Amino acid sequence: MREQKTIQLLNVTPDELKNSIIKDVRVEFQNLTEILKQRQPEEYLTRRELAEIFKVTLPTISDWSKKGILKPYRLGNLVRFKKSEVEKALKKI
Image (cartoon, rainbow, N blue to C red):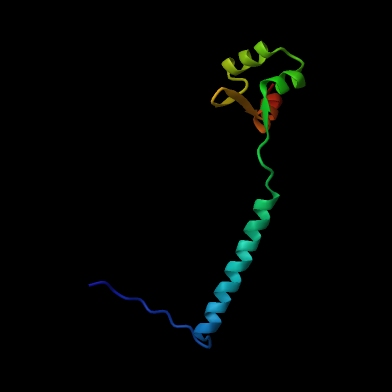
């Protein structure tokens, strides 16, 4: 048979406990909402934009992708690069 555990709270009514829990959960949701609002969406760059930034040709961008210097993301026929990853690749070089 399964043993039941009992917790007793003294000097707290069920409504006070409920209100305290609701208040704390609301505060945590507000904190989480603020954190999520501060996040910037990921920016993606095209091959052409990268070529203009680096002052290189499109075949050079393709070559860097093949060598693993840049990581391309494909969406159908579209090729995009995460700006944050491009910046990290520059720091490595």
